Each structure stands twice: as structure tokens, then as C-alpha cells.
Length: 117
Image (tube, rainbow, N blue to C red; front, side, top):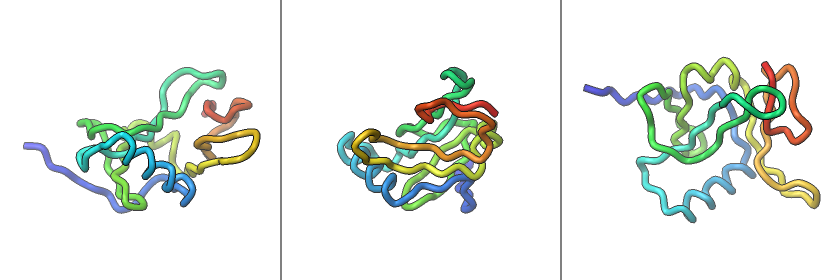
């Protein structure tokens, strides 16, 4: 029997600009309430780890958080790398997309999509 748990303390923050974009993407993809925002890391990128950000269904290894109206899924093992991170949306002339400000990153790449810990 699987017990669904939601933790109220989130290890990360998402700005209003990023929330607006995530809501737009969620609606465009016609996702259901079963889906949540997956935040994580994977090996690769020019600095060692790349960020994972997308909509997914909860898996057994995930912790679940409620953040700005979104279900957020994160593998427990990824929390050490993402604790205190802020996800923002940049909509400028030169750059447009999600940005990650991670206090755990010892080094980041030029584009900000990968880091080393």
C-alpha cells in the first residue's frame, strides 16, 4: 500500500515570472492533476550536472512539495544539490528561458544550465 505524502517545506523557490510560464506550459500541454513539476539533476553538461525541469508523474523515489499551486516532485537524492535553489524566468532581449540560482553550485557554465557541486 502506497502512502502519498506532501511535505510543506520546499527545498527551493519559484519566482512569480517562472510560475506564470509554468502555468502557461501546463495548460498548453493539457496535463492532468496527476502531473507535477519535476525538478532534479542529471549527470552531464559542461560543468558536471545539468538541471531537470519538466512535468511528470510522481515516482516511488520522489518527495512531493506544494509550491505556488504546483505539485513539485524531486528525488530525495537530488535535494543535497538543489536545497535553497531559486527558479526564475528571464525574458530579455538576449536571453529567454528558465534560470537557476543555486547556492550549492561551486561552479556554473556560461549558459547557467549546468553546475558542479
